[in-house]
Length: 280
View 1 (cartoon, rainbow, N blue to C red):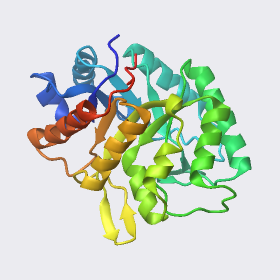
View 2 (cartoon, rainbow, N blue to C red):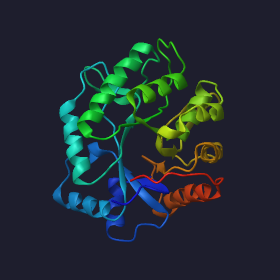
View 3 (spheres, rainbow, N blue to C red):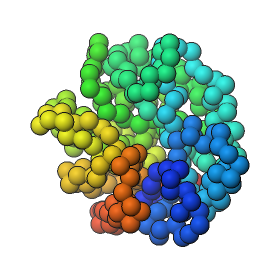
């Protein structure tokens, strides 16, 4: 199994035919998919996907685990997910440190209250997921727009969950920037407060500037300069980790998309020399 290294891109279904029938751009070190979109596909698409997983390393980034939800954990889904990861030899599964379901699926990422009780609830569920998967769960710091019932700050909450659950971090650079504007904190200080040893890989993305003091995380635009700068600062502090460009809609042409992936590669190559991390 090849290691996950360098810069990555999210695989969308509309990209499959082009990539399956041609060369994968040299700047792409790995790809990421939402497993929910690939668990049940037609035989032709499944064959194309399998062919890609045999050519380039993949990671999975989930949408519906709902790790912070009050409802019982969907263990049947987690077992189905394990079969998918094993079938395609995908070692890394990440999800959002949030929840998206209650009595029904809400199709949005809701903020988990930053409370001691919530830490305990999430930790118990993470440990059960890891037990079923036979893998460490990788949790992403998410963008959020309210702090209901907070007893601690965001950074403390994240670090408590990571430490007590003994899980790993998907460090989303854009989400740090978005939250720093919306909640008025220093993004560099926040980034430096995250535990280097728990970072598995990273995300970078574009967003929508709703107002001077309000950014909406959309993954539908180009990455802006302050986010690129924060990426470089993150490498300088934590070392170079595999980093994926998220682009979920308003997809540009493949050459334009690859130009942003190449920019990740250039920032990685220009980062100060310190131990990076290649992930098997």
